[in-house]
Structures are given as C-alpha cells and as structure tokens.
Amino acid sequence: MTALGLRLPTGKLLELPAALGRVNRACSTFQTFAEVLRLPTRQMTKLAFPLQELQRQLTPDSRLDLHVKTFDPSLEDISKAESVFTATGRNCIEYLSSAVRLDHAPDLPHPEVCFIGRSNVGKSSLIKALFSLAPEVEVRVSKKPGHTKKMNFFKVGKYFTLVDMPGYGYRAPEDFVDMVETYLKERRNLMRTFLLVDSVVGIQKTDSIAIGMCEEFALPYVMVLTKIDKSSRGHLLKQVLQIQKFVDTETQGCFPQLFPVSSVTYSGIHLLRCFIANITGNLKTNGL
Ligand code: GDP
Image (cartoon, rainbow, N blue to C red; front, side, top):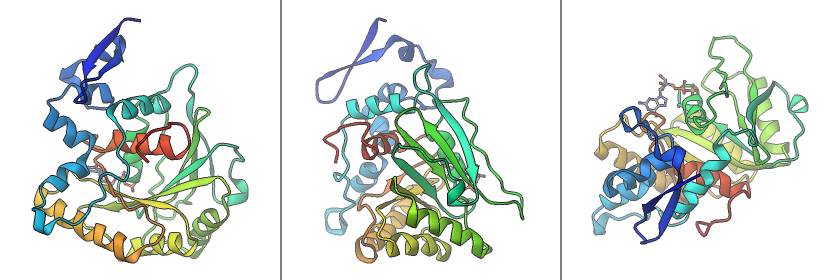
C-alpha cells in the first residue's frame, strides 16, 4: 500500500496508510488520529492534548502543576496506539458477556481496565468513542430504573479486556456496591481503573464513593474528565484546577495527570487510547 507522508513538528516524517489519507474531511469527526494530524497545529494540539492547551492559559503566578508531562507520548506513539483500537480481520474487538457477580465474569488471561462513574457522567458515550474504530461493537446501555445493573466485558483482540462497570448514584442498592467492591478488590488482572468525573459539575458526593473504594483498596486509578466541550474555557479551567488540587492533596493512588475528554469532539480520546495501550503493556512509549 502506498503511504502518505505527514511532517511532524519534530521534523520527522510520519507515514500514514493511504486508506486513512482518503478520509473525507467534509464528514470528518476526528475519530482517527490521521484526521487530527491534518489540522493546523493549534487545533491539533487542542484535540490531541487538551490539558496542555488549558495549562497554556494559566498565568505563570497562578500556575498550578497540571502534570502535563507525566504521560507525554509522541504523535507517532499516539498513531501507533490506534491500531490496538482498530477492528480488523486480525484484531477482533467484541462485546463478550455481562455479569452481575464476579464469579460470573469471564476468565481471561489479558490485562484488564475498568470504567466506573455515576449515572449520566458520559461513560457509555466515552466507551463508544474509544471503540469508534470498531463500529460493530455494541456498547450496551441499561438505564431503565429497576433494571439489573451489570458489568459488561469487551475483548480488545489479544491486547486487553475493557469492563464497563454499572453507573452508580444516590439510589445504588447495596448489592450493587458489593458487586463493584468485590470486583475492584478481587479481580487479579485489573491493571487500572478509569474513574469518570463530569467536568461541568466537578467531583460530586457520589463520586466520593468510587474514589473512597479505589483509595481503600490501594488501586491505581486515573481520573477522566468528561464532556469538556460543554463548558466555556474559563469554567473548564476552574473545574480542572479544583480537581487537580483534590488529586494532589487528597489522593494516594490516583495518577497525577488528569485526562479531559469529549466524546462529541473527540478531544483527548486519542491520548486516552494511547495511555490505555501503554498501561496494558501493548505499546512501549517514552511517555511514561
Ligand atoms: P452514562 O450514563 O454515564 O453512560 O452517560 P451517557 O454516555 O449516556 O451520557 C449521558 C448524557 O450526556 C447523554 O445525553 C450524552 O449525550 C451526554 N454526553 C456524554 N458525553 C458527552 C460529551 O462528551 N459531550 C457532550 N456535550 N455531551 C455528552
């Protein structure tokens, strides 16, 4: 296949498969990183590294460290990570099964990551965005009140398993907390928990349930800030600074760098894919 060349800011030439080069810009949604790379630098940085963009807006005297360099992969690494999330004949990405109890969960040898957050935080939208290059994958949503809440397991080829944990809220029944707690405490191959917080409203009381669990079980977890397209830049910056301060001062197991994302604009999605590929051992980068 003929390759297209794209000049990176480092001066290096990044080769793109011809098929990616043909994506029609008119219907572009920036689902692929090749589309992002074709944007003017400023716009590209905003989509690829939204936290760096926010950090730039801080005046030097008010500059709280947003740890933007803690995970700082190259554009090539982000491009490479995309193949992990791209469904092909050799990379089968599929919904596997659901479980209400840990002993019903599939027993898989791969590293696992789980996504947890209160109802309406944007969890299904985020998982759909991460899997947008595997359009056959059906992200199941059970939102009907009284409907049994389940853990949904997705197999990402030979690379890793992604678990969509049930959303929690004020009315989360006790057996639900037990299910999540047992999973977090006992799942042996769980590599990282992604805890979603709505960037519009910041950390809520209900979020503290999940934060408390991760801290209590000394789990490594990461805070993902959803819906960043919904707020003005000023409001978003205020929320990010508050959450960063919380992470720096109140948590032990939380990864210091926040991951702001939008499932609508795809801002931050490519970086998050790269981070997941990296921590599941599927991409060696200098980023960590
Ligand atoms: P879940 O209950 O956590 O799975 O949340 P959903 O993914 O169903 O999202 C809840 C609502 O927020 C829906 O109306 C989504 O369309 C909306 N939403 C989710 N993510 C985003 C986002 O990144 N940007 C915007 N503007 N809306 C979002």
